[in-house]
Amino acid sequence: MSVQQLQARFDQEIAAAADLAALDGVRVAALGKSGEITQLLKSLGKMDADTRTAEAPKIHSLREAVTDAIAAKKAALEGAELERRLATERLDLSLPSAEAPRGSIHPVSQVMDELTEIFADLGFSVAEGPEIEDDWHNFSALNIPETHPARAMQDTFYMDEKGEDGAPMVLRTHTSPVQIRTMQKKQPPIRIIAPGRVYRSDSDATHTPMFHQIEGLVIDKAITLGHLKWTLETFLKAFFERDDVVLRMRPSYFPFTEPSAEVDVGWSMEKGRRVVGGSEGWMEVLGSGMVHPKVIAACGLDPDEWQGFAFGTGVDRLAMLKYGMDDLRAFFDGDLRWMKHYGFRFLDVPTLSGGVGA
Ligand code: DAH
Image 1 (spheres, rainbow, N blue to C red):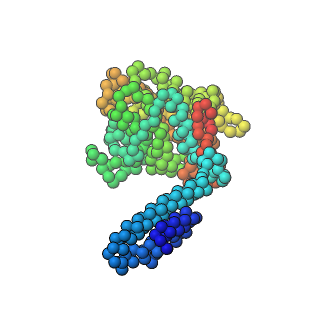
Image 2: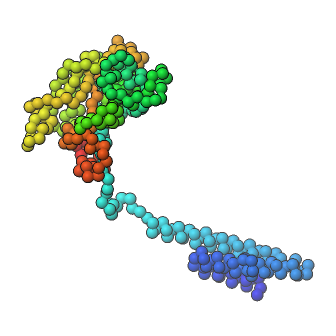
Image 3: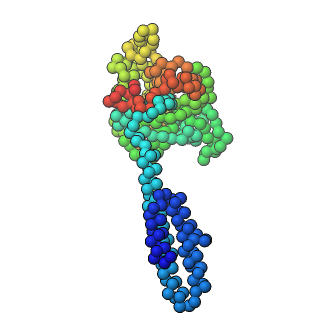
């Protein structure tokens, strides 16, 4: 068979190969160890010089042409294979899930999202700080000196590790140190909330060693108690989704605020249940006050120029009041039955327009 005839035959076989396996068969038959073109190349050695000079270029170009044709066909077959796989493995992410969605959003996460949404609308941004905190940020800068009874009151978890000042690091006992970190970092005006985990060595139906707080801080010029009261009232009405939420501010004491106030909300009985709204009785929900000048000065700001208010409250407790759980410990047991009952659908993202109650 002439080289030309061979080329025509291989071209045809290559064109006819329907898949990669068939194409590889053609390759072996042509270019494999005992393939026809390989044999032809081997036969060059046995030719006399003149025949070889005449035949060698033809055989080499045959090998090249067949090699190229196989490579081109291989690329085409692979491309087609990829297309086919892409077509069968196509996933339309906009289609509804075939399975009922499992899992739910924990009430603590949901309430934090609700709070973030409410305060974002009031122009607050979210700030964060470390859960392993140094003594200065957790206590001293907040005007809680070493001998202060508040240190013992807060049942602090101490770490073995020591901070820069040689005092043991602590698991933060409240979110208030985020006030300090924010004032150190940012120039006023400041409007932040700081939700997060806090730790105290305490455990019963209403206390767990880890729980959640949210801190609020506003620093600006000419801020008064009036701004504090309006902010808390607006926030609590939005959170409990009732216009009849009544606040009562009771003089109190916190080392980092002066004056300080504890805030109660009024409750009333509805269908045998105690709900927020009205004023048949009172329950405490918040600590707050005007930021102490010593705290502002500790952060390197001039307390004669800047002042503001702060507040702090328990996120878990707000969730219990709004959604009716009565045992805080169950929040952190990870019992799926509890999660199914109290959890939120992941699509129930709180928005002010949609209602932050989900
Ligand atoms: N840090 C306080 C606590 O854990 C709560 C608190 C009270 C925070 C008054 C404040 C505040 O910012 O002004 O009990």
